Structures are given as structure tokens and as C-alpha cells.
Image (tube, rainbow, N blue to C red; front, side):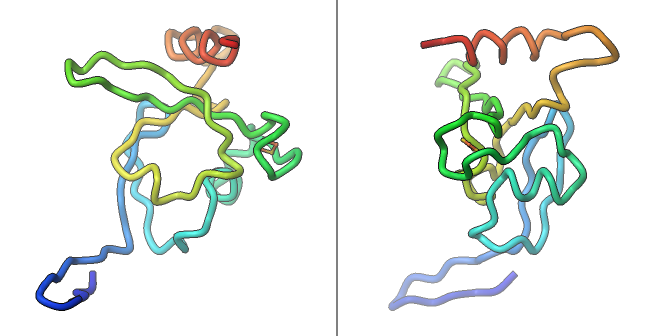
Length: 120
Ligand code: FES
């Protein structure tokens, strides 16, 4: 962690953060702020998400991100991980393709993510 002071305002900058991936808390350390989620997923061995266009057009890299409203009610939203930078996921909940199945059965998150992906 380092301290940055601008005028009379200072803030701490960390080189790590956590987010939930497929229901498990993940610690991310030392990644450049320009690394995309797709790059990170693939570099950490989660190769189910593919890189088709790398421009947000084809959907081969789609993940589901959980958004919660003020009451805590969650909604999964489809997001193209090839154009989403890692710092955007600090404290968030993400489901990648690896999180969609256990064995040969879909589980609840898969059903929710499937419905998001089918939405117009
Ligand atoms: S690789 Fe095509 S939308 Fe991400």
C-alpha cells in the first residue's frame, strides 16, 4: 500500500483487492489496472471464457456479475470480460463459465446466468 497526497487530500492506494468468483472469495494482487477480467481468468487457469473479438462484440467472454439493490436483492447482469478491467471487480460477485456446472448438472447460479444471457 502507498499513500498519495494531492493538495490537502490524501488517499491510500492498494495493489490488492478481493472479489467473489463462482461463490469463492478470491484475492487479487499486483495486477496492472489495465488487465481485463478475461486476461486474468485465463492466466489463472480458468480458460472456459474465450477470446473471440476482444472488442465486446461476440460474447465469447461473457460472465455474469451480481448487482444488488438497496434491499440486497440481486440481479445477474451479463458482461463482456474482454473489455472490463480488473479493478472494476473489487468487492463484486462474478460467475464465470466454470461456475455454471457441477458435474453434469446446472446449479442455481447457472440457471440465473442462463436467464440473463437469454435476455434481449
Ligand atoms: S471476446 Fe468478443 S465480446 Fe469479448
